[in-house]
Length: 482
Image (cartoon, rainbow, N blue to C red; front, side, top):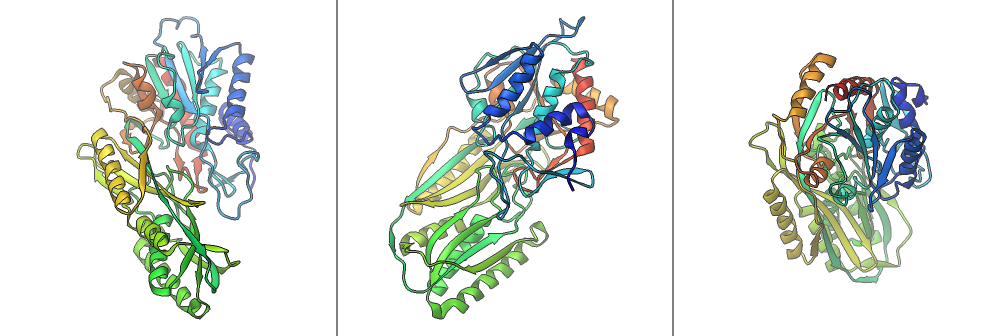
């Protein structure tokens, strides 16, 4: 059912989140969202500055009597991951997010919700226009293009911030204080391919779907299926055992998401149609058995489709299928220091064919810089052995935990006092802007926290309404204590 988001409590946050759901804000297309922030800053008479990358900083003076308090920065990113279920009619460049409420949680209707990091941004805006918080001098930092690789933070102007404390509002687990994160790098593996005239036969569109997907960092250890790798396994079998030719394939949609869906168009001799369908059914059953309760919704469909004019050269099709089915996906190492924390991982993120080139995108993460690069080299070595060329982006650094810092101590004390429980100190196996921006501002103490957000980067994303109220209560007192 529909819900009036702006009327939820605390209204000072939800009214801004409601506004943000109506503003399209894919990564690199945050201008309208940034203009919304600027308009509020100008209405309030606050100083604001924009760097060359498009990041925005707004400054607010301290409440009377707190002018000598250390300056603190509240930070969130303006963009959101744009994922939708196949069949959902939604244009992320123009359409508002359709928000629904179920049993105390907010979801979107068939798309990502944008609570990552819309709730954090809305909360910063609530502080910006507040009159009842006895805070010291504040900076509000709104970055761009976080979701495609922290590029806004990477291009953030060095020395722009004056704050001693940096409060990242991009956390996704209530009652935790994040004090460290992994660094990451994205690898692009490409192979030139040839095409041939499509043979006579029947064409089918084969689709892997129903997987949970999720964040390629925080969800990588949960045993969820990878649609791209399943498609590769399927194509290997269809090529080898049913003589199939591959006309097209595509899977995944973002380098930082575990792929939920993938498809291929194949052509087989009409006499082997039953054989093809039997193979698909067998692999579907095998995958369902293997994933079990980790990802119980996985399915593989077979639908007749129009015959293509051409197919991928058999040798190239074999190379692509072999590569995406063989690349490692998942945890490479667990942390020896922090129980339960993934230390190093790799995600097989996307496969696509454009013209005469196939591209596989993978992402590697680690809290250890040398391990991050070793994982990227591992992927590159395997891909080059399969006839692919490989390039890596510049990546981003991790954030080393400082559990004894002043901001961690104060935050723990406030959390216990306000919410009645000791927060759990954690480090994330995901990229946070703290590490990137902190590297440009030496000595700044950092912490990350937020409300309960689950299944980010997928259409199952949801935010717990009650946790936003607790998040707000904690933040207000924290700002009065630092």
